Each structure stands twice: as structure tokens, then as C-alpha cells.
Length: 322
Length: 253
Image (cartoon, rainbow over all chains, first blue to last red; front, side, top):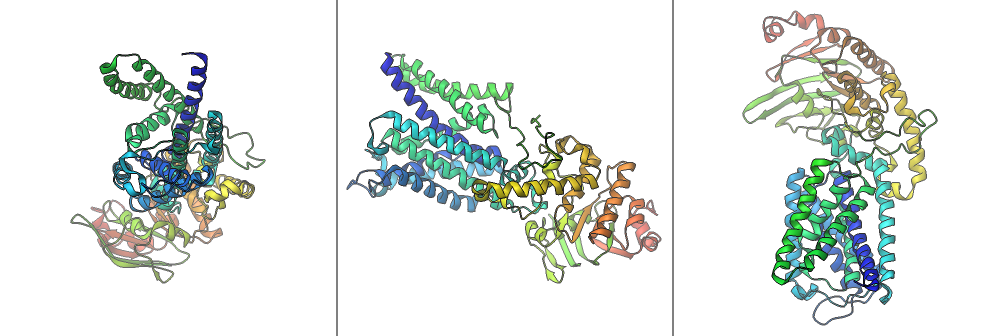
């Protein structure tokens, strides 16, 4: 690979890592903070990608939408649509115990994918949506990268503020002991639903960025392996409940995943196909190693600092999660 | 204050509570005793909204609140504790109490994102309030410990502390003294007496420690097999024949 190729690959790598980072932060709000077991990440990612693509794409007689609006409109539409879909799904399922919620969300994400596949008049069906413009119609990949990095920084800030806020404290309480949270007068369903909807809106945002970056989306892109499980591995590797961990985990797992792709690409035709499956195995193996060696991830969850600490208590609260 | 009227609840054919009726008078410390399996904790669960009764009514200040969810009862000033401590174990003792008050503007994510100054100000006031409660309960020295790491007795005090973080009117204590050593038990009894005297809490407490019952409770209600079998002051119920029989030959008397 020459220098120019390396440069382009680097930008591609960072942009995709950033988009995954947004999703890992979103999952961290749902799972890390709140214990909401969402296995349907790919579904909200898809809803966001399609909502944005239909808003920002060029008109096409084959399907609905194509309003050629700016990316910011696409992003807002993506977040609202994903959030709304999450609200409807959550209103029906959020009371389920965590493992049942996982099964329900996994199923719902597949339903979303199949609906997209079959509602061709709106979504372009199996052919997908093409010609989704990059931001400002710019050919410069750095523009996309900059937008993604801004999104990562903003969402990191929002997610971390949520974590240390009284809102996050209630959710950590619910995660630890739901009965105790109820006895403390908390409307558990409301808080869990809020975390689910906010996380899903962030996932929708990631979808909007992805659509604009790749320029083409189809139902195939939203299968659970990439859209859901890879993100779970990223969060668990990095440290569930820790936002820095979520981002570092994303970076490292995406690095391993990408390099394994470079290696398998060197193999001759037939073997390369089989090697694709080996990569998934590799990621599973990595997850096992991490869970055995460091079950709390590379960056374990920490107690948040006391906000607005008073004179009396200053200085006695920098407690590490042990 | 609370009037329990013919509450019944069965679990898969076992009648845990059977047409149980009694009243917790405003300003009283009502004791609820009875042998294991009498249905006391189930009844508490029903009154606090954790378990839906099969039939019967619960009147809180005259309104039927049977089947209403716990967070709404909490807002009406009805708070419970648990027999086995329900702490948020990986959160600090202080955080356990900071979580409780219901009117925190920071519990709205929008406020926490965009009105941080106000949230911070409230947190500052809240910390002072929590530290007062911790001092009251002799828990100030463990304020920064993880709640999961403090002793069983201290967890019991933390349960009581939760009821102090809100404008409670009536507090249901499920075996506050169980597993608490003698020294801590005195602290606990004093705390209950002070809350009763200074804050005007009404208490209903389940307890097996008869010294604690004798010290705190009047009247005492005795349950067996899901129903009330006796009611009155401690002296009269402990000499009641049915009560002695229920406790298998009068261990308690």
C-alpha cells in the first residue's frame, strides 16, 4: 500500500470507528448505565440511516423521499424517527426482564430489516438507496471525518453528563436493585424507557452518519453481526458503564476487525470467503479472553464524582469502583 | 391513617393473606407480630403497592389505594423498608440516600444537559441534607463506603435512612431489628422514637424481637395464617391464649 492509499485508509478507518463509537456510547447509556439489554441496535441504526437517506438523497421515481435536504435535517430526522420507533417498541417491551427484552429487541430489529426489504416503494427494497450525498456534497473525506468526530465529542459529553447526573444515578440504582428503586419512589418504567429512547436516538444518528459516509445503503448492511454484536463486543471490551472505555473498546475492536480483514484479503478466492467466518470467530474469542481476564473491561466503571460538593464533603469522594 | 379492609392474597393455592383487616392509627407505632409464614411481609408488600391483592381495600387517608404502584404511594408519603436490606450495593452510602428525594430537577435529562447550574445547586443542598441524616443514624463515618461493603446492621440503618429522605407520613418497617447487634439496635430504636416524636411519622413495624416491640409499639397486632388473631397493647396480647398457641407453646410470652 502506498502512502496515499494508507492516508485514505486511515481516514476511512477513523470515520467508521467514530460511527461505531457513537453506537457504543448509545449502547452504554442503555446497557452500561441502565441495564437495558438491547440486542436490536442494528434496527435503530437502520431506521436512522434510512430516515436520513430519504431526507437528504436525490429524488428517485422508484421510491418515496429524496428531498435533497442538508445532512443536518437528515440527522434530526434520523434521531426523531429512531427515538419514536424506540418509544413505541419500549412502551410495549421495556417492562420485560432483561433476557426477555434481549430476545424481543433482537426479533424486532429483524422485523425492521425485513420491512425495509419489502416496502420497496418507500425504501427502495433489496436494491437499497443509492446516491446519498456526502455532507455539503464535498469530495473531501476530511469533511465527513470532522463531522463524525464532532458527533463523537458532543455525544461523549452528553453521555457523560447523563452518567454523573441525578438522572444517571436513578438509572444506576434501577440497574442495581429495581425493588429498592421502587421503594425509593422511582417510576422505574419511565426511567428505563427514557434511557432506551435516548440511546436509540443516538443509534439513529450513527445511522445518518453512516448513510452519508458510504453513500449507499441496503438491508444487507443491517444484519445483526455488524450492526449489533460487534458493538456489544466493543462496549464489553472497553468497559461497560465507562464512556472512555466505550470509545477505546470501539477503537481496539475495530482495529482488530479491520486488520483481520486485510489479512483475509490476501488469501485466494475460496479461502477468503471461509476466512470471513473465521474473523467472526476471532472476535468471539477476543470477547471470551476479555471476559475471563478482565470481566469489567479495560476501563471498569467508576463511581461518578459528587457534583456540587459542599465544603464539608470536599475531597473525600474520589472513590474508585472496586 | 391506613385502614386495611379484608385483604386477601393467595400464591398458587397457598392463602398467604386471608381477609385481613386492621387499622394503623395516625401518630401510632403499630407493631405487627406473628409466627413465620403468618403473611406479615406479604401484607406489607400489598400495602406498599409491590403486590396486587386478590381482594379487599386499603384506605390511605380515606382513599382506596389497593393496587396503586409504589412510586405513587411514595409520593403520598407511604414508604417501606425491606426485611433483607435492599441497598444499591456498588453505590456509596451517601449516593444511596441522595437518590431518594423525588423532586430533583436533575432527574430530568433535559435539565441535567441544559440547566446544570440549577442541578448543581440542588445537589449541594442535597449533600448537606444527606449528611445530616447520616449523622443522625451514626453512619457518617461510612458515607463514602460502597453500600454493599458495610455491615448488615448498617444496611438496616440505611433502609431507615431512605425513609428520612422524603416527607414520609407513614413508614412500614419490615423487621428493622433482624440481624442488628445490640448496640446498633439501641441506635435504631432511638432513631425510630425520634422520627416519631420530632417528625410525626406514623410507623407500622414487623418485628420478632419482643424487647423492641415492648419498647416501641402500641398497639400490637398479631397475625397467624393470614389473618389478625389479636390486637391490643403488648401486655394484653402476650397473655392472649390464641397468641401463645400460635407461637407454638408460648415461646414469645
